[in-house]
Amino acid sequence: MSGINYNPFEIAQEQFDKAASILELDSGTRELLRQPMREFHFTVPVKMDDGSTKVFKAFRIQHNDARGPAKGGIRFHPHETADTVRALSMWMTWKCAVVDIPLGGGKGGVICDPHNLSAAEQERLCRGYIRQIYKQLGPNLDVPAPDVMTNSQHMLWMLDEYETITGGRYPGMITGKPVGMGGSLGRTEATGYGVIYVLKAFLDQINQPIDSTTASIQGFGNVAEYAARKYTELGGRVIAVSCWNQSDARAYTFRKETGCDIDQLAAIKDSFGSIDKEKALELGYELLPGDDWIKQDVDILIPAALENQITPAVFPNISSRVSIICEAANGPTTPDCDSLILQKGIALLPDFLCNAGGVTCSYFEQVQSNMNYFWDKDEVHQKLERSMKKAFRAVYELAEEKNLYMRNAAYIIAINRVAHAVRLRGWV
Image 1 (cartoon, one colour):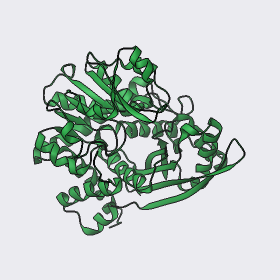
Image 2 (cartoon, rainbow, N blue to C red; image 1 turned 45 degrees about the horizontal axis):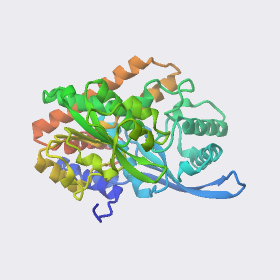
Image 3 (cartoon, rainbow, N blue to C red; image 1 turned 120 degrees about the vertical axis):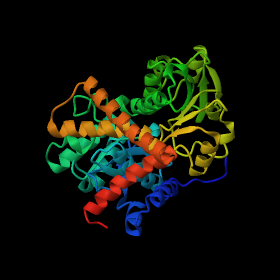
């Protein structure tokens, strides 16, 4: 691995600056959009089960709300940083804009490891988080959602605390809730399915049948699992899946040349996406080092874990057969790899387009909650597929017309929409 310490916020700003230069944005708009409009840094004291009190550092960062209420997940992670949350909030702004939904970008985080917290401690943490920040949240202000190592139960605890404090029922203040408690059908699989809707749309454009392709996936959390499910349902073959193994604190790549059985792997993973390696070996999977997912001789690489996974240090390990990188994670490819991807002739489907299915379905949930009227799963999936394909076509057509790298084309569309909203409001 490279010794470079990549800062996600600097990466987000660098990507923005490239697109802003192409758009010839004025200095005021550029300065406004390259940094968050608001940041909240706070501490959350939690009474632990043993009677002690532990204090957790937390964030909520709102990048821009010119197009609508801020939108973005809350993640629990032991290595969370303010710069990571800043970057993710900025990417959320572009993500909402590229799929043309009326929301802005925000993000939250708590520095913690939920693996080491009991359910009761996690509940107290969720409620404490809301007590510290509830004045800045709401259906018309900022709408959180689940992210890394948070789930629908966490969201419901947060909603309950918000409603207890504010004295009303506001199901649209948070998304990713359990179905039956204001959650949308289809939300669980939305991000992963959205990734594959974009991939399928691209394959259709280049006349490559999806059932003739193979893929290697990094990650096996919610996004990766459902991307793998939809990809194999459409006929693709997943050769390898890499994920973190909690039991011995390292990553492994689970490989099967004939194709991974996603239902089988899902049946032997825990709630945090760790696959039981002993059971996988019994089922005939080859166990390789975690980084070997990128070395597989496949057509498509799908990074669906954390940021900064494809760097110049690991790029030479990519097989000459790989023709597509489909970014399911946020910021999985560092900017200094973009030129290498172009030189190698690999098609890059950018993260904030590919993984916008989650926020799109969150928007659907928000609309349903605010109306108190809920759609069936087929309707949600149809609306999601239509939205993702429409967004992809706009990006692809601009890239083809202007001979642009698809990441730059996606940024140009998104930034232009946000800049237009900022100007119409008279902010610049």
